[in-house]
Length: 232
Image (cartoon, rainbow, N blue to C red):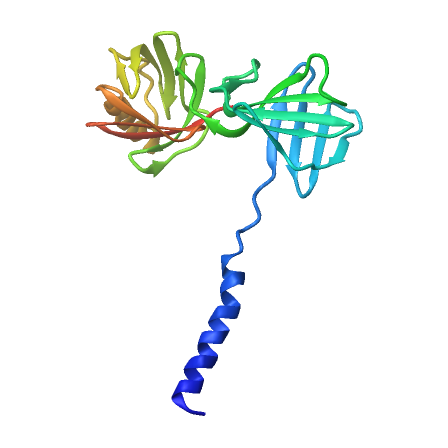
């Protein structure tokens, strides 16, 4: 076989393979949650499935969405769903926030809908009222009930392996300024005491806040870095 024929066959094989390579990966199902009553919604695999408490789930074929202001609508005879982006969405029962507001009507779109949230987790508008697990101190993974930070209005508290501590703080995104932190004085063995000293050093100065995901918070300053995960 001549060199030109080999090149032509290779080009043809690449041309046949290209469409397969260009196919997008299947997307993950869309999940939404609501309260009063507690319900969840799953959209994916050609179905919309609504679950509430202990009742049998309602499953309908997923229609093509239509465009509405700020979002999209899925309308069927048995269930109608609207998903819109109206700012952070909170379920009213926790400190979790989501990217989209979800409204569900059982049947056609009439009367008052069920309200919920869906999409991706986003950062809370303020740290007040939130609780976080400390999962790494200066890059070293930690875990357990004695590693956490709790933020109340103007005051933080927590543990970093050993003693309980608390103090004031102010928050102006993306900056966090802890005040003087007071701690109990119990001695703890080994690494837990080292972890505490490092964490208190980090919390002793101004910090920058970053949210790689809505349920992950990174506090960084001259003293080092704390990585936290939402406790809800």
